Structure formats: C-alpha cells, structure tokens
Image (tube, rainbow, N blue to C red; front, side, top):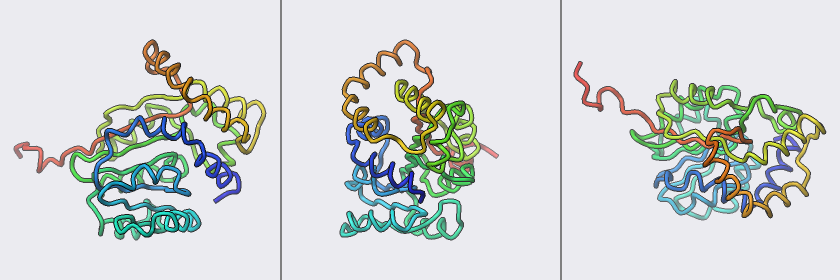
Length: 248
C-alpha cells in the first residue's frame, strides 16, 4: 500500500459524516451474508458487522490485520488476505458462499482486471443478490492524485454499466454523486498537482456534509445525471436460464 493511500485511508476513516453519506446510497440493499472486497483499514467494515456473516478481504496484509484486531473476536466476521481476481482466493471464498451482498467501495479502480473481479463476484453471489459499488467517476479529471492513490482509472457511467452487464449483473441504479467534491478534486489533481489530499480539505468537507447533502439533493432533482466525483451503483445477479423458467 502506497504512503499516499495509507495516509488517505486514515483520514477518510475519521470522516464519519462523509462515510455515512456514501453508505446511505446502499443501506436498503445490504443483506445478511456479506463479502466486503478491499476492506482497507476498515473504513466501511463497521457498517456490516451486524449481519449474519461478514467475510472481508484485502490484498494488503496490514489492512487485514487492522480489521482482525478490531473485529476478529466476533465469530461471524472472517478477514483474510486475498485477491478477488486470483482463483485461489475465489476458491477460499466459495467455502463461505453464496453471498447475498458483495461490496466494492472505492476498490474497483485499484484492480487491474476489474472485469474479472466482477465476474468472480457474480459467481459467488446468490441468484438475486446485489453488488454494491462506489467508484471514482469522470475519466477527464484523472490526475496526479489518482496516480498517487494507485487508481488505474476513473469510470464513466457507460463503462461501468458495460462491465456489469458482461458479468451477468443487472444494474438497478448507477448515479453520479458529490458534484461539489468533483470541483475540489479537479483543482487538487489537475491544477495544483497534489499527491495527497490536504487534511484541512477532508475535515472541512466532512464538517460541511450536513449542508452539502441537501444541496446535492436539489441538484439531482433538476439534473439527475449531472457529473459528480463518484458513481454509486447497485446491480443484481441475473437468474440463470435454467432457473428463469425459460423453455429450451
């Protein structure tokens, strides 16, 4: 894990209002058997610890150790080092499958083979289960900050929808979010060329979330697909032909 990413994860873990805002997009789609892909240092793990089973993985050993230290005493929480694009990890995850919810929060952009990650996730998902995705949007604002954080890409809505369809997943919604945050990111990444988010920006943004959320709601009521810093997306696994009642 790069120094910039570790630094940013530590900052964002403390941004409770912002994290609540992100999770609010997905709350009603969280089931009882959850796989969290890319737990990092547990920024969003607390939102899932009250389910019946939580399996959480990350490719970084330090992140997994952090999660184990916090929630390893809970019998229904399992954390281990693994890569969702590695067949050995998928085999190990299959021992706990099927899952009714698989979470990728700020993760897909770090995975070189994001298409394979979603295909493997779909295989581990029960019929009708949901994949919850939060990713950076707008490829045009990709800059030095993205590179420092280990982002391989930022996503257009069309690109993400295409990936989901190819993985056998039906999008329920795929919505841009955080319009005002996109302005700050563009300044940081493309104008000032910073390689880490300034701590004062994170603290200020988190403090302003109670104001920014209703402003965003008003903007979306007028222009639902106005570009934003991120995309919030939920997709459902399509029934297999054998289970859909289709005749041969």
